[in-house]
Structure formats: C-alpha cells, structure tokens
Amino acid sequence: MEAEETKPALAARGVTKAFDGRQALDGIDFEVGAGEVVALIGPNGAGKTTLLSILAGISDPDSGEVTGDGVAWVPQQAALYRRLSVRENLLLFAHLQHEAGQTEEAPAAMVERMLELTGLGERADDRVGTLSGGNQQRVNIAIGLMAGPSVLLLDEPSVGLDPAQRERLWGFVLGLVGEGTGVAFSTHDIQEAERYAERIVVVAEGDGLFSGTADELRQAVEAGGVPSGDLETSFLAFLRERGH
Image (cartoon, rainbow, N blue to C red):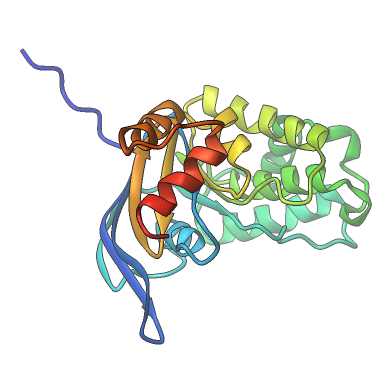
C-alpha cells in the first residue's frame, strides 16, 4: 500500500499577477509544508513580496489558486506603535483579533501568552521605540501569531539586524518551526537562506526557476558546466545561465 502524500499547509498553483501591464508573477507554483522552512530568493523586483502578499490573502491573484488557511503575514516594516509599550501594542492587536472573531481567547490572556512565547516579559512595559530592531521584530511576529497560524510568512525579517540580533530572532522562529509552524521568508541574504531554510525557491521576473536544497542548486549550476562555489556565487551563476 502506497503512503499517502502529505498535503502542504499552504500552496499556490499557477498564480499570476500584473500591475499596470507589467507581469509581476507569471504562473508560479509554491508550497510550504507543516514545520518546513522555505526561503524565497531572487533579484529586486522578482515578485517575492507580491507572492507573499497573495499567499497571505492581502492581495488577490489575477489567476491561479491558493489553498490553505491559518496564515500570518509579517511585513518587512514592523507595524507597531512606537510610543506604546510592548504590552499595550499586543493588547491593542489582541482586542482587534478578538472583535474580528479570529480567536475566542480573552485579549489579556493572549497578551500574556505572547509575552511568554517571545521571551519579552521583562520588556513588557518598555516603549516599543526603545527596543532593538530584533526585539521589535519579535513583537511584530508575536502579533502575527495571535490567531495560531499554521504558516508564518516573513518578508525580509532580518533587514537592519546585526548578527547577534539575527541569531536570536531565528532562534525564536525555529522554536515555532519545531512545534509544527511552517515558515516562508524572503531574503537577499543568501547565507541566511542556506543556514535556516530546508528548501530554497529562486524567483526572477515573476517565474519560479528552482525549488530544492542549497546543494541541489549548486548541482544545477555544475550541470550547466559552471564550477560552483559558495551558494551566492552559484545563485548568481544560475541566474546568468537563465538570462537574468
């Protein structure tokens, strides 16, 4: 008896999107499994943020299909009120979630759970504007997690963070992954993609060009007769081979 194929937690099939006559996405396929970390890499304007926003339900595709629910979207810019404390920010968004019927949990209880989850309990009464970039991003992610999503979408989550802040942020995110949350993130940091993602998806000019591990990307470059080096070198060679 054949094993049943595991259904992805979130999937896009044949998704297209155009803006003012420019094709941002051209029939792209993409998926994230439960407890899987997937990195989206590609040049500026490749369509990464557009794809993530469609997966999050913020933008509608022109055609194609997105399946899966329980998705949280964390944009690159933290959607926080800098003059409010960490607790006040969380409580505001917890009330909004509760009033929208997205959770039955009492807002105060949700805030305490998020403070424990993020490890920010000691900073609960600090104004968000005084926090480091890494801690602000953790608060931003906590807001996205309030409804208990199955998949977390992160748009360049470590931009502006120093190496120590990036390491702490990813320690937090990978803790969620260990509990079964799927994660898809866009990044221009190829080393970050290699270090944290189980699978890498290369996008350029709205096309999905590759999906596989870092080693498989290197092998694809070598198959084209180009010696592979570090992943960034291989990635650039891969794009050049395909005219990008």
